[in-house]
Image (cartoon, rainbow, N blue to C red; front, side):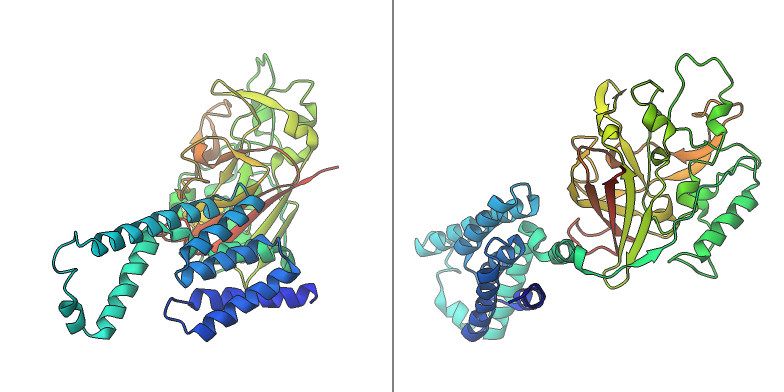
Length: 422
């Protein structure tokens, strides 16, 4: 069996396992298990196939085997929280079922449970329906990852085997002293050349409505000067920082440094090189999977730079900005998988639960130039992260309406990749 045949077999397994129930025929169950075992013969340590085998046992009610297989997966992927939670919730569900059975067998429950005549009088379809409803409720509250995360896992597995459309990356531009109408016209022009083109498009007033006419904008300076005594005109010079996002609507989630590091000799590379402007080097799109992939370049030296932020000695934090995402209605986000990434806040971050984008543009004083500059606000600590090694990767889920939970299939998937700039 070659790789393509194995891929097709796994895809078929993905389609048939979710349809299984305890009421499936023995022939149906055996057919599915046979296909899973065939796939494992050719890839015995494939965590995805093993996970589907665990889902198979869970679907047919064999919780002991499901837990055992999930534990094998955890040995291969020790940091997988979805698998860890699946084991935990299966143990809880199994214990709940056992306690119920013990109670009934010992005769300690009320007479209604010990009365076979009552159950015998209930129509069989009603009993089956009640069983399905109870099981669905239990799984919904105890094992949401098992129910909703199939698409997330599939997308991660096939990410290198799908075809992408390459989208245009537009350069930065200078917005200083332009009118609000001129800014809006530029924005509409870029949107009309993007995935989100629409004849009726107008920039969202919630996000862009506070732009001030004929004012300077935060420039693309990446470092602040020590012991500076001037008027801070350097901070508005050059291309405007926010244009990396506004000129590239397809990059739904932009990046920037929320804290301006001081210019030292040791970090001169970052202060003078272009990668600190966080303009994407590549944007790709796969329509079938509603997936946008955006690539950036970083250097190994960048990983060594440190700064004191709120009394914390840390690598330079990078903030995710939903300026474009909000403009197109994607208000909600969640980090469902990352590699060589640490969230800046140890708890209450975008990797722990669904978060809301709050980005907007207004006139602020952070640039310290006379009368202020148009810039993005606010600080969003829950969306800040540091890169620990290269290459690095963050996988996001974006929704237009608040999802029931973080495992719900996304309206748009968004992958940020950091490669090494040599």
